[in-house]
Length: 95
Figure 1 (tube, rainbow, N blue to C red):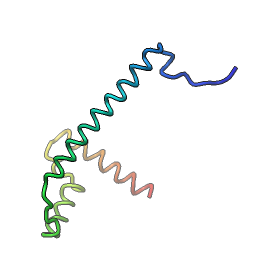
Figure 2 (cartoon, rainbow, N blue to C red):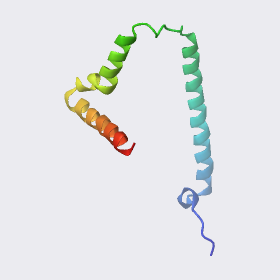
Figure 3 (tube, one colour):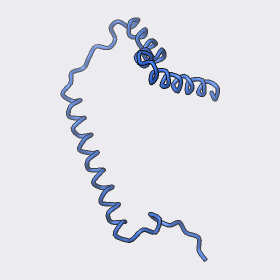
C-alpha cells in the first residue's frame, strides 16, 4: 500500500472544479481591489514628513508604544494593550 494524502477530504470531483473557480474568483476580486487602491495612492501628493521631528517621535512613543488610543476604551483597550505588551515582553525575552 502506498501512503498518500487525501485532497479536499475525498469530496466529489465537481468540488475540485468549484474550489478552483472560487480561488480564481477571489484572486480576481483581490487584484481588482489592489488595483483600485494603488490608483487611489497615485492620486495623492507627497507630504513633508521631516519637519517637527521631536513632535513626531513623541507621538510615535505615545500612540505606538504607549497605546494611548486603545487605552481610551476601558475593556477592549485594556485587553488589546495586554496582548501588545505581552508580545513586546515575549520578543525581548526571546531576543
